[in-house]
Length: 182
Image 1: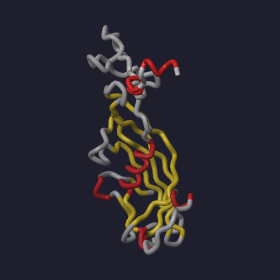
Image 2: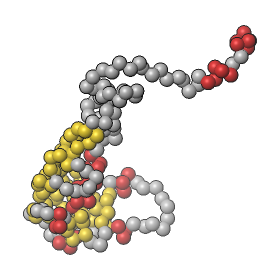
Image 3: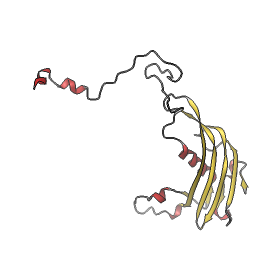
């Protein structure tokens, strides 16, 4: 078992993975990438198993991030608690000569270079894959008023509702009133 204490030791050479596999635990992880605002530090484990030149990684990740709601623009805490599996293959095995469509099995694969596997890259990728497409502070978030900018989750504003014209409303101007009888 290998325990991670700092970011300097965040990786392993593929030749250093024993035949029985390598178990890596981490806790109190506060930094992974500058674009992530970590609220509750991440903890979990990685189990690396070498299969020839390929490496199978099974792991667990738990922590939370600060995100901004897409509707009301307020910050909120988003928790992540997930198991994951990744198959790593060497990047040099890819054939870039011909253009082809990837199979579904190839989409489940990540790559490593120079016989080095970076733990931080794997964990960062898994966090990004855990993020929702639409980031909402709550499922029924009302957003903000388009006129005054009031957060409608906190209070009701007195602005009149904007009535949007249909994109086809301009076509009414093209019709001559005399032609309506035709």
